[in-house]
Image 1 (cartoon, rainbow, N blue to C red):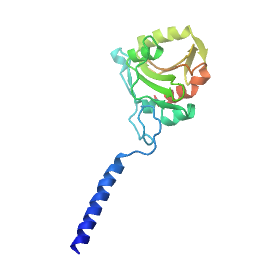
Image 2 (image 1 turned 180 degrees about the vertical axis):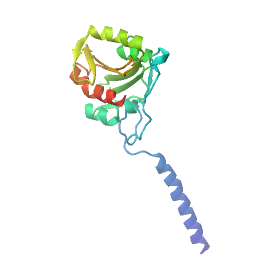
Image 3 (image 1 turned 60 degrees about the vertical axis):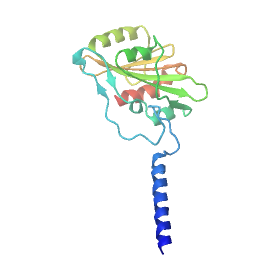
Image 4 (image 1 turned 90 degrees about the vertical axis):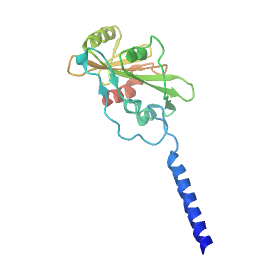
Length: 192
């Protein structure tokens, strides 16, 4: 009788230990805009803009909110989010980062090409500068706001109502037209 009790206790302890290990495992990986893998994202806090009253630009938003795993998959099922990414110096995404924005990256799993989705809230003086720069680019519709396109980069400006504007950039070798950027740009604008 005592042997059964000990065996049952050991079995129960073993199951609890295995249960603890199983709790740490995640289901089959799903790409997410933050670069992590795991189940669908849970509710995240809304983006936190840096107040434009300070005269500085900036925006804090998780990549998983800016470009959800589902948005990335719908755009191209062969991309995965990169957890840590630094945009190339002089790129549009680097400019967004220099203005306190968030830069997210999606990597094509076959080609290794990177598509960047970046966003920031521009202070009024920065909004004027970016609007002037956008005037020199080709106008583009269907991006979710005041859009422009040049080379492999789509820009979207959305007024925030206080002389400031949200600026979304979608760029990379896969972006050969504004239509290529539209699903990612629209989702990013909707997240702001």
